[in-house]
Image: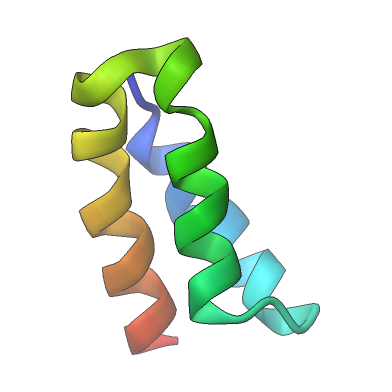
Length: 54
């Protein structure tokens, strides 16, 4: 499914490079067709939490 460890580090890097919270969310949602609902459901909360805390 989703790799929350990778999401944890990639979101931090993306934010440092100027990505908005909306862009991070949209990027995770784009993967729905590839990883399915379980993958998105496991990674999206992590991505948004990491974005908000960093």
